Image 1 (cartoon, rainbow, N blue to C red):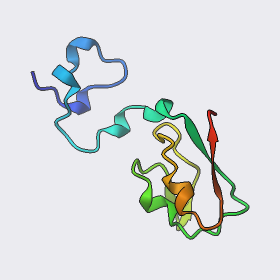
Image 2 (image 1 turned 30 degrees about the vertical axis):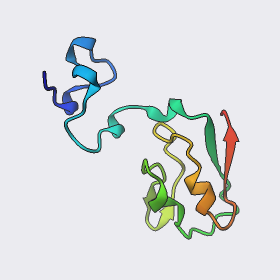
Image 3 (image 1 turned 90 degrees about the horizontal axis):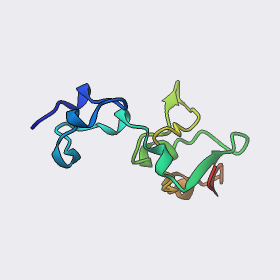
Image 4 (image 1 turned 90 degrees about the vertical axis):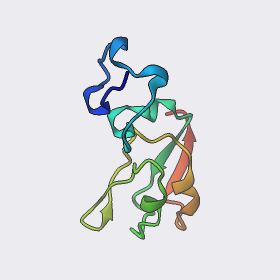
Length: 100
């Protein structure tokens, strides 16, 4: 059974899911709120941020949107709390906190 991922949403019944939950299209994580998986949450300290934008391209889930050349707040619906953004920030503008 092959199901187009665009037809599956959070309210789909189990009958609509593919066997083994296989995905047949790329970029499907935006359809699911995977942020609830995280154990650590990034906290953005805007006052420390110099808008170098080093954090945005390293985020594996594209959870740091950039609008008009400035980073915006985290997309916590999809952030898994990996901490890569905090590790690359030279200004300590991103802090990882347990929980939240």
